Image: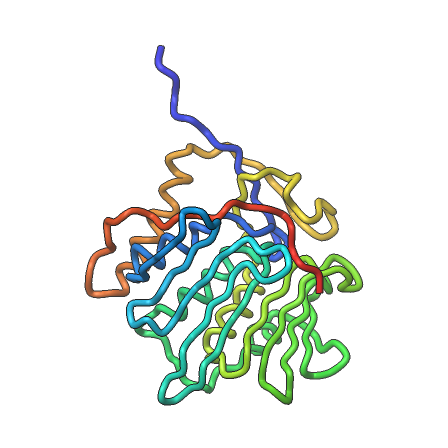
Amino acid sequence: MPDGPANVDIAYIAPRHLAGGGDPAWITVPLHRACGWSYGHDPLMPRVLLSSPDQKALLRLEPDPDGRWWTLQHAPAPDRPAWFASFDTRTPVEMIATFTDALTDPTADQGDNWDPQEPLLTAGWSPAYSHHRLASPDDTVRVEADKTTGAWWVDTALRDFQPLLWQAHFSEHTPPHLITAFTAALTDPRPVPRTAGPSSLPTRNPDLITLSHREVPAQQVAGALEARVRSLAARRSGPPTTSTHPPQRPQTERHRLR
């Protein structure tokens, strides 16, 4: 008798900020196929470069053990100087995706009336040392705004914040609605799926994470990315492109400690 559909062992982890980086295709494939970002690469270099259709934004993804793996640079606009955002390798792709999804959303409110602290305060985060820094209820994440420059930092660690698990940095002039999308993702209680196995997690401490396993059909796993592409493409007037996926960088657990 023929074998049945292949299943994949999926681990579901909450909170998501302790789930590890995940599959970069969750970000790169929709940017290319649904949002029209073009890619160029050197086949001898393990990196991905994606450019927005207007050539004003560049997403760089490269395995640099001494720096940020994800960097998004945006050129100056008539109403805003140049800015950038960066994310370490263990930053969950689902959280970075909320940032890029907001960036590419043609219907997004891009005004400066957004307060990135508001989702955190609503979720019960409390001030840590000053009103410019908020800490998660489990004290594994801290979000801080530099009152002088306007830059924002998100630090994640298991204890005492030395060393860091990952860090996100939003430079001065980063649109507030994009930072708010990221801080809102920090409060999302839904678990995220991972296929790499528990050994890739920064911690298995049951006091910090909830971990459950489920056998899922491989077709369903692949379909989740396709559904995401279709959903983002629906925001635009045209259909998603059918060209090949951008290359993906190899995964690693190495990261820079602040």
